Amino acid sequence: MFSGAIPALVTPFGKDGSLNTAKVNDLVQFHIEKGSRAVVPAGTTGESPALSGDEKRLLFETVVKAAGGKIPVIAGTGGNNTAQAVEMTRMAKEIGVDAALIVAPYYNKPTQEGLYRHYMEIADKGGLPVVIYNVPGRTSVNILPETVERLSDHEKIVAIKEASGNIAQISEIHLRCGDRLTILSGDDPLTLPILAVGGKGTISVTANIVPERINAMIDTFMAGDTEKALELHHQLEPLHAAMFLETNPIPVKTAMNMLGMEVGDFRLPLCEMSKANQQRLRDILLEIGIL
Image (tube, rainbow, N blue to C red; front, side, top):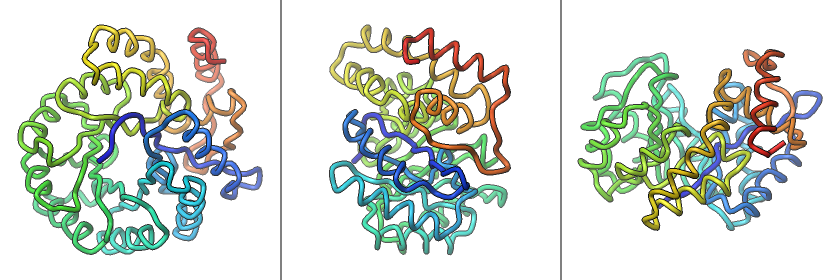
């Protein structure tokens, strides 16, 4: 259902700290022009824990209107309260969102059975196609391949964003699920290896800046030119590394501001990048010819 470079959109804020809907529109237009295959508002990169329910509604409405049906919108509607995640997913469906990105419940630390029931409840009642989001580094739970296999039997569960960092696990998911479930990289430096074990694309931080370069790598690999794809992967590596000099989305928003994209500041508990890392980031952007 989804493939290629899919940016996990940053959330732009104005000088007063409010949601900057005009800039949201600009970002979506940028991604349409650059060939991004979909956009994801209110993911981790979009500082979703710091957004209110009303702000998420406004964000989804703005992105859907800006996309105008030209590219799909995958809204981050997950959370660690199953009933609230169902409600948020229903709201996104009413707005016209195309699919829901559902992060594994964080802090609760559910069992594999609890994870299964959480996703099934959202798939049964939310009304949207579901993209599972497995990111153990942020949630403290890992959705195991056998659980993903069980979930893939549900017609509404269509994809997984895999950010476990475990290529063997991702390969096993493909072995178990095959084409029933689209595998998307959730870890920019591992996108090429994930393609090699059955992945179809990436929900990406780096794609906020260079979606066309990431699409070029993915399309080249899918066309069978693995040597050229590896070359393009290596060209992207310094930028991927720069995006994680500090906690995401601090580096990517800082980089976008350096590039004149004016996406604003952060909401606490996130704060500005250290001066030393700002200089490292600037140096990398200069070295790879972006800045």
